Image 1 (tube, rainbow, N blue to C red):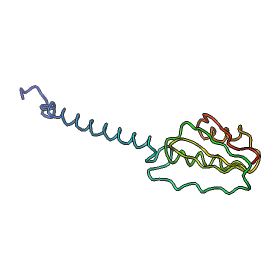
Image 2 (tube, rainbow, N blue to C red):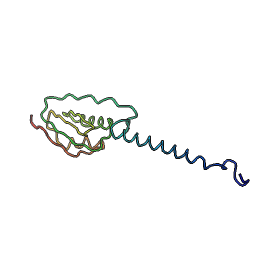
Image 3 (cartoon, rainbow, N blue to C red):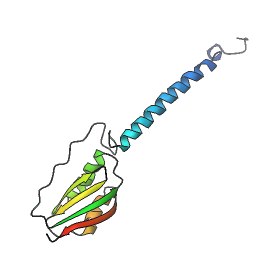
Length: 138
């Protein structure tokens, strides 16, 4: 110390390595958590940190039509549950939704317009890439 330095700041250069180490640890954890998030683990999209309970299956009458939706924007199990709930709120519709690949499998017991199905999913913030009808008037 040369007498001009403040005693609290006399040796600041030795802590630089510690700061870099802490930054590296935080960065590694962030990358690991983000990778898990995009594989559907963890609580994203407002779901907290634990896995949410599954959405129960919906019973409908005799199936008259089936379609498959290709979806965009599903990131986790919470997203799957939200999309499934949205579809199941449509009268006469029962749906199963998967994360990998992001798809919805819809069964109807009446004539349901594709626009109603699309609107229910997109109201939750997901994008319907395509709707492919498998059966109609079964």
